[in-house]
Image 1 (cartoon, rainbow, N blue to C red):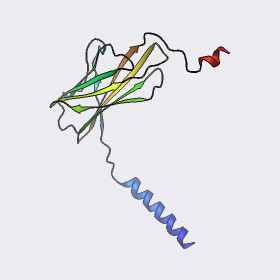
Image 2 (image 1 turned 30 degrees about the horizontal axis):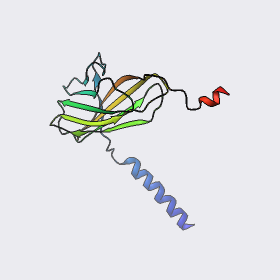
Image 3 (image 1 turned 90 degrees about the horizontal axis):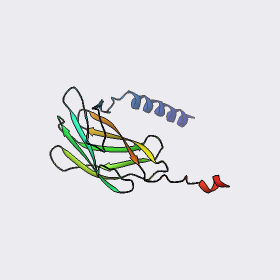
Image 4 (image 1 turned 180 degrees about the vertical axis):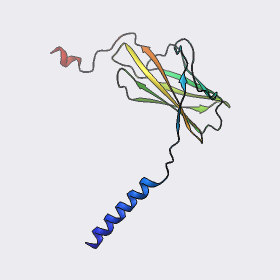
Length: 163
């Protein structure tokens, strides 16, 4: 019984300590997307009132599926960048999360590779989230784009539907 009470007290004390310690989460600063934004035509730019800005591009600009794409982020007004993370997710159909490991190719430029999966939909909408980590904050830009398949694929279980 004494062991049970001790375990209970330690559990409650541990939870209290864990819940009351200071948060180490960085504040998130949303960068506003400038319009128009069409990655097929030109890079997209996101910025804030403090002059922090990032420019995002995908090459080739036709954005083919199941081919290696080069993604690039150019920054301006951002200092002490610890890390950049790029995540792409499907909007009109869940396609999992696609990630690009961005490496520095200059003082303010970061580049990586990305492959987008093929979809059963002819028109696929995507949302890119670029997270820029600094010691003081996480800056975030959300950039939408669209891909078109040359031919829509049948659903995976099409044979079951035809019976």
